[in-house]
Length: 423
Image (cartoon, rainbow, N blue to C red; front, side, top):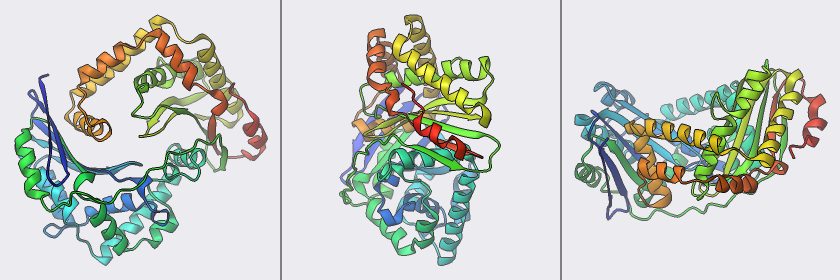
């Protein structure tokens, strides 16, 4: 696929990046706000996510229904998400409808307007969402994990906030956050697909012209890792187990070594954990590892849902696999095989306009540079067996294993859980 990247920084401080794809009918565009959960005041945890919801309740010129209909009527998609480090409003449309999509997104991030009734209703929705998340153990356990291993840090906060903070949030606080942080250099416009860069720049100048260039800075403190072992009693059918080790940040030169190792350990059906835990022992239906990467730190997580009577056996296998990895490393044939798997996933994703919109935005926000899929493939392919073994020696530190257990009748496991070793 032919690709062409362009970048423009506007006088308002807004950066516009785009990647032209010749062989697609679609265009994906997003407006990214450099604010997420880790930037929130302690008494306003969850404000970024609540604000993301409130934006869709209406603007000066559109009702909530008109916002929903604006792109849906064209066959397009309009959505948003909040993470611990940013908020993104994005749309996927046919290339001819890009101007309409951009104008709607710009309206959302510039002219929010809602009533007291809307505010009360959406707070109620968020409170229900918090309750629902607690009913989904596989999701809820991640909040418990981050809260315990990053205790006292902004990264340990739930994106949804808490019942207390959401209940006490005011309309004035929402508008203040919106008007203060949805400005200038905090904003990044990203587009990929059948897009014309100059057209996007003109749209940004037209519809985001009123944005201030220098919003206030918010300090980000690097979190300290805590080797926490948490137990949460909950009436679930299985015991949910989530383990974690410190891992490279998204900005680390070792990030792609981590991607390969994650794939080998628990990233698919051929991974070591899947084969040994599910296929050979039949201990768990769901077993996988994942990377959670932030600007200044990262986490390698291992999750499994298991019958309570088989929990100790599961943990023994995970500990054994980490010891084996630390002691024996991996064979060159394994490295090449998992490189191929990672590269294949990356290139398949690169054909998707939304994936590329996300990718070029993240690269710009973090590195202020463009990385083509081919450049990333080259970086992955250049990783040697010696480098992988050095990476394992540096980052697989079983003595730093943190974890959470959630399920019924766990009090009897408390002493074992505190003392279990992965070394």
